[in-house]
Length: 308
Length: 308
Image (cartoon, rainbow over all chains, first blue to last red; front, top):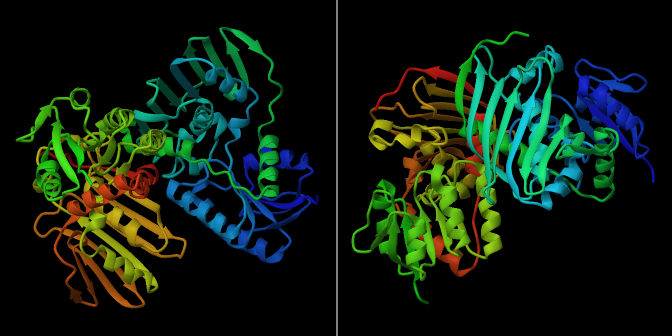
């Protein structure tokens, strides 16, 4: 089969670090151009807007939208309306309603829409899902604590309204949890900490429950210096589960098995190719819905100003 | 056909004002009991919990859940698990995720779940929908401004996290707009005003757009004294539309037709009976999704303390 002609839109850190290497290794895709207000990809045609690119390159079949979520909807409408398949970086939009709208538009146009959640493809996630399916869960804990100065240096958009703040990394945890839990969690209580000079939270403590009566606690913090924590732990009838390093490693009662090397973005592009070839879409809103619910249900605490 | 045996749960102001009169007039229902921590309904059996009521009255077929949204999920799980049909007052829950969960449970149990939106049954709403379907909309404006001291005296739960604040009435406007707009709106910008001593907003200004490029503005305010405003206006190619009085009256370029008397709750119970008889559910989350999106995308402004 001919490779799918692809463009990346919004050329920033995540495109350079993850998308370009993953696309380069995948024979199902042929990256032929890019559109970005500031960034460029060497060796292919570059445009400053998606509209200019779609006009100039009619052979283009698919686009990966990697700009900040606040600008993603308009680009997605433009691409879907032109009959292009669309890969959405996470989160798939700034609001739930706009993504519901995109789903309908993709169905109407008969093209693929893929709302990607890269952490679901971390090496040990499927093993954790299998483990939890075979036991009774007593409690679950999510600890997602990192140093925002190290991971998001100078990224102003994550602090703006709609940028999600600490839920920008936190939604990775939620994308894993919504995938591995046998019964879905919902938010029962939330406290969000907003720096007095910012429109997005720097920390959040979220209580969850599910229909089985499992209680879960999520601790999200962007002020963690020293060791970073991207852990999901569960106390179960079959022992203590620790899914650590953002889903890369799994230990049951301290015993760890090897689940292979990290390949999140290569897996995402394999999935996107399979969706396009199979004429299907995959738009799971559950992680973003939990974030929206946390904002709606959450108490707001104002905390000290944050400066990069 | 035998009437459906029904109970109301959470006996407060809305039950006395609306549910009891509507149920009394509907021959499809036979109200046989009630459960409430504090309130009572005269002339039928009263219980202090839904669990006690379900144990004592096995012939009960359906329940209307009218307690504050923060407590609705657990009662709904209890009722659905016992095989009862469930009518949810608006909003259907404190979070979107819990209602998604209830939908799945209702389907599994083969019973009806009805997320009611009473304002959709206001007299002039269908006429407004027909009008908008036949023209091009240029702009839309929602003005939902009322005096909280008059309409919600001493209702502490609406000011708590999860009580939605000014969106408790505002979601009525959103339930109408999501019903009458030919293409769905989504939130593009939001500013929420929180009194410094409260966990829910007292005012909100929301910008919306849709796939047709229509821009809409929503002004929600709980500090309106004097005349109250529950208006949706649209500038269209076919003239100026004013849907006023919470959906009761419609004027096109100032010309008003009579759309009959108010019958929102009687219409809701007619719909519930038809869903139960037809073994169907009706759970539209669009209004609550717009509220959650407003919280997620919204800038927070702290404003002066509010005292009842």
